[in-house]
Amino acid sequence: MMEKQVLIDSDPATGERNRDVDDGLAFLVLLASPNIKVRGITINFGNVGADIGYDVAKNLLELVRADVPVYKGAKTKTELGQSNRAVDYLIETVRKSPGEISLLALGPLTNIATAMLLDPSFAHNLRELVIMGGSLKFKPFSIFGEFNFHLDGQAASIALSAPVLKTLLTMDVCSQAVFRKEHLRMLERHDSPVSRYLVEAIDPWLELNRKVFFRAQGFFPWDVVAAAYLIDKTLFDENPCSFSVQKTGLRSGRIDQFRRIDSRQAVDGVVSINVPAKLDTERFMKLFIDGLLKF
Image (cartoon, rainbow, N blue to C red; front, side, top):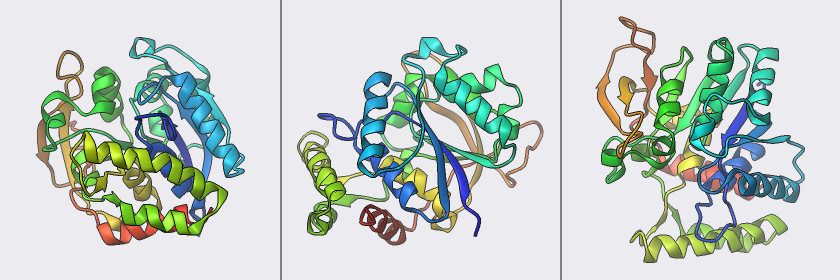
């Protein structure tokens, strides 16, 4: 099987106090997969500032001895449409490998939308675009807009209307999986330098979810679910849909006018988006934990 060529655009905060750990876990699961080649990582603002996100990514890659280039991108949504090192790298890499690159978006979509604005062929030359973002019924984010979309609704609207094969993993499907205390214990028993680092990073996040977010069972590994789609699409159902995204205001990033359609092809000028509704949770968690235990 040929390796799938993947670029990741992300806002990693793994190990940062009171910040989500899932971006870094998604990196590791992809790096552990034999059918994935991570070509590069671009950094966007989001969970943390772009400067901190860059350091988090570099440190994690150094820990697992992965030779993957990292480029710093947008620091705020006001930089939409402005070139930066991350955007230049995205455009250059996709232009050199037309039809070969799968782009995984794990944060606000400012870098990706900027690449689309600066290079009209960018979206067309992608193999696929896989996004973690949006909420259909997961409250309150279904009302006010999910975090990634909310931070730059304009960018989300641009990316989701682009002429490329798109899959959106919403909070609704991502929340079907839960990382529990028992999974942390598996990492503790593994006892490698990487697993010790992960235990130290994950344990406070589990406690924060329990005490502050009232998620007694554990935390939702949002970004890992999106990464898993690139590794094994059979974990998910196919659900072609169309919708719009509010671009600005208090409800920036909110999904509106959602409807299911019959085909993943453009119909009457509407570009469909695959929005899986179901996840094979047991198989996903095995893929997830097995990936982490490879380090």
